[in-house]
Length: 502
Ligand code: MV4
Image 1 (cartoon, helix red, strand yellow):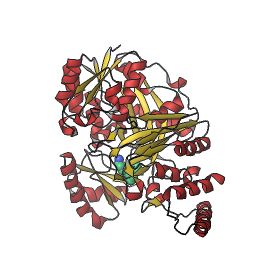
Image 2 (tube, rainbow, N blue to C red):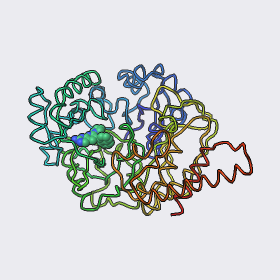
Image 3 (cartoon, rainbow, N blue to C red):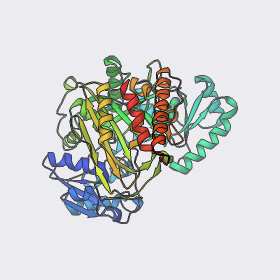
Image 4 (tube, helix red, strand yellow):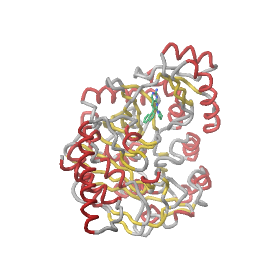
């Protein structure tokens, strides 16, 4: 087993990995930029190595600096976390060459799955269902037109080196395809230094559901259920759940086996995630693979009662998987809210600054993963994820109720956060029923507040009751105090109570 691990990351995930190291008797070593001198991940590590100025392309993204930090600190292995260098095959190769161990997949598998077209080829070879379309990049507009007619409109043009929505174009008819092709191609060239695009049939109103898996160096693989990740805003996940409200045991087994077959075909090792699109008839299609530990891994840990960071470290050090597929069972329901330093009332604008007051929820079924503390200043240079607030309960309904309780216990002052967004979401009836797809958030949250326009009758009744209640309070208050100020905070609470009463 490793004696010490260098954590090539910052913030909540660096803290999470350091905790996993400690629990296995391994010494965690941090790296930090100028902007992170006072950060929590630096405080809790045994050693911390300064790696340069605040901008990540001069610090957390510099391969040579990370490897040098690992060498000088005497680390045996490097955990990349997510983001930064975590899916960079050149980094994985450099780590392999240096004689250190990367806690992640082999560079070869990272490279194969990093190209969306070669990932689609692998998935197809593995016999997994893949969204209809091409498995290599398009040579011409004419070829794009031919394939589009074969699979049927609408189609999507996607960057072969892309991911996360960049270089993606929806094409509804043949007349749009030529301009979409050149737009997608130049966007792909600008963003990924690779103009290649491929084509997929467009899946209408899909859900995004992904399978967590892990493999050891002996060819053993286990899948650890799914995560429901449909609630996204601008290709950023905002809330994730395990299990998905629409996945039953049979679908879970079929998706899990498909995921393991894909990972095996790629020569994969360590933790990874296979993303699927699921249509309204519950057909699932391979979308892409994430070759790293993901932000939302805690919901899987809460429901499967396994520690993914422990297991990543064990298999990277050459141990066999410590559990079999038969031993993995799903217990209860978990939900994660991503708490960002962003203002949900102002188009989710980043809100850096000093956290003047912080009261963190606790009690039964709560897990709070954070890289922040009271008095800390949120830097402007990085992703603004402040914390991941997770709840677990016996059922999804109880987990949502618990989430409402937990969000009411949570106080952050000095900066704006996405907490008010989640307080509104937990009272939404469609969300509570598990009826949503990847387009839900755009309809739910408009102009900096929850939209009361919803085609759902229960929701309309709840909204009318909420409005009546607000008007009643406002008018009776105005009777007592003519200078009553508008208070957004109390409006959410009122809305919340109406939701909870139902
Ligand atoms: C799709 C799709 C529908 N059909 N592909 C968006 C991000 C990128 N990773 C893949 N994305 C999509 N690909 C086909 N063939 C719809 C989306 C999509 C989406 C996917 C997952 C979660 C949220 C999304 C929001 C909009 C579009």
